Length: 400
Image (cartoon, rainbow, N blue to C red; front, side, top):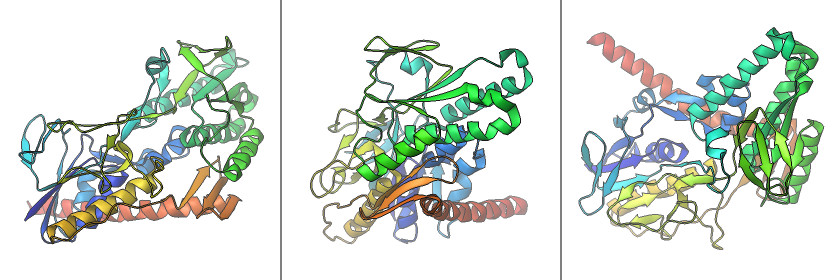
């Protein structure tokens, strides 16, 4: 049997497993330090309280048991890769592989030049950080409802970074706050949302259609947009800008950038400024090691760097899985080639803005419906495997 190890159970890692699991020549191993798969694309809804924990986290053991062919799930962090021996090392053991797919994703980059951001800012790349913000925010809403003495006090939610994650979080938070007016009364209006970015515009790099319609929606939601605003430092309750301005805040969410998660290795691979692996045109850093998703610098045919999205993670995963099958058969593999098929921006409630294939443009409920359709199809597939695996494990445990 050919041993294929996949390190990382994000969007790319799971898609790679799905494409390889039917190959009877392959024995699959999935490594992750967490016991669950986190749907990061739904983080905006979770931290705002629209989604529950079961909507964004799925048990990996049950998922792995949901396939016809066995998958070995190892809940450990991979600490070292020895490419010469084709082995990976965890804290407790060493495992051999024939092919390796690194899909370790990325974490929030709390830039070192913004003093205090790593201490006071909430990230959303990790489930525990999203959960921490959600519980803190819900406690604040409870206090607004329970304690009349704090009514009249303004609460500022500062969101650093006006890329896709920052915009979606700002919009969802604002929509949820509006809905809370029914439960906590007029004091909900005392909660203000500030969206901050150093760029000249929100959603830098996206099309004028997306940017313009998103900005209109954010304005309708009452969000304070602060572009061309360079954050110099953050302390317990104040954001300090380079131009001397200040903003008092209650909570700070930071989505201003990513830092790839890499693994110590004997080959010392090249990394870019965001710590992403720099691969060859076949997404490899070594003959038998593929790198996919957010931890890899991925380019299109024109050598433009593609955004670190779930869509690109899945496309690179499908390519890596297909390439491994070809290599097993001693077939030649072609360079990776992909583009972003479309982009949808969730903008609070049942409203979104989107583009498909650069020429289909939609907004409002239709865009929201299409976005949910894409997310739902992914979620249903995961849930099917999850439920199947849970039943199989329950039956096997009952037989013991």
